[in-house]
Length: 231
Image (cartoon, rainbow, N blue to C red; front, side, top):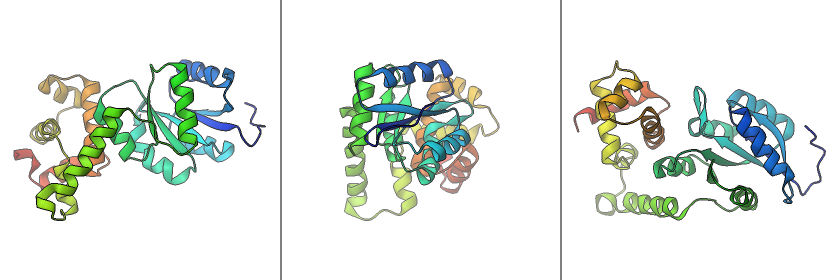
């Protein structure tokens, strides 16, 4: 891929494990009248770090679903190692996933079904230093900040208490189910809760971010430590 671009060109790196989607998105970006160009593609975190080191992107479009990896979970590590602004791509409209993406360091969230004009505009806005998120996500984030500031009558919360206070009732139910069925698979847990696998995965992504844990094992340790399985 030709990376001999003028200095004003916005260099975009696509991270998605579905080649057909990446190819279509690359064609859209490269054929637009906007001054931007796809300079690289990757399908996982390892490839992303390698390609980014070579092409030095300005914007990284990062899909949430990357096979065995979750884009939001790997986002903080990528941000530490790549000097670029990140926009999360997702197929879900779940506001919790969008909020978690922003709280994890993304500068914007795009739906994979968004029209071309929206995707191109988001890339431009984020490149210029603006955030790209819908009003619902913005309002929810502001409400969360207000709740945390006003929790305990204005007293400063212990960091662990603050994490727990951010959990929704549904997230607490999921944690309780995980503790009670710690040897069950995610599929068995989702069946028990009468939700889909993808819905459970989205909830877990949000919970991991709020509690600052990396995986289910760390979540169980945190839950047991703070007696969340009985709440």
